[in-house]
Image (cartoon, rainbow over all chains, first blue to last red; front, top):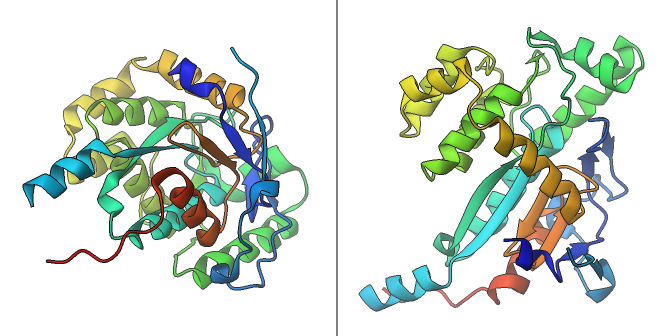
Length: 55
Length: 227
């Protein structure tokens, strides 16, 4: 499975919210929750950022 | 029909979800991911695999009130907790989900060990999802061994094995390894969803975003099947 880590792309689209891995603190994200969930912006290549370093 | 089944099996897409029980965004994110998958006529191709991400390893073994654990991890005062929780409740309700404010929290390491056992039986997501839904709806104490065993049996697991796992330390290494791997893969936010080991999404994304990620790894939504 580790070989599959290479080239994993992380989506950079703003999340509605998340909890921090280090502290467990949870946050409301920048995505506009007032907007219906169905109206989410579409992803494009700008929303994908770099690959992970090789292990 | 057999041919279609075989083709579907060949093209299964694994969707891994790093999450913790009491993480509200994991609850919403899970349902959004499920919604995105269920809208595809080829929904059966997608296999959700639970991965453990313990968010509060310092949480006490004895359950504490939700507001107590919130203040311990986030700081603030009870009024702020209530305001934040009501905001989450409103969002959840807007998406058709119950969200009880009267929850107990405690250490989830034992639960994650049971999830690992459930994964071995191919039922990790089904088990975790049932536990988390019961927890947020407010009808389940997931820190009670008998209650957990009951949920396990309801999804087809062996309740006796669940009690055995909880009484010992089985799967502890895998729970810790899951967390390490999530961090290594880039989990800057939980939930952390990895699709086919090609795309990863930290945090709770919207349904439309999950739908697009599914499309990227599995292709566009196929035409409706002809029966």
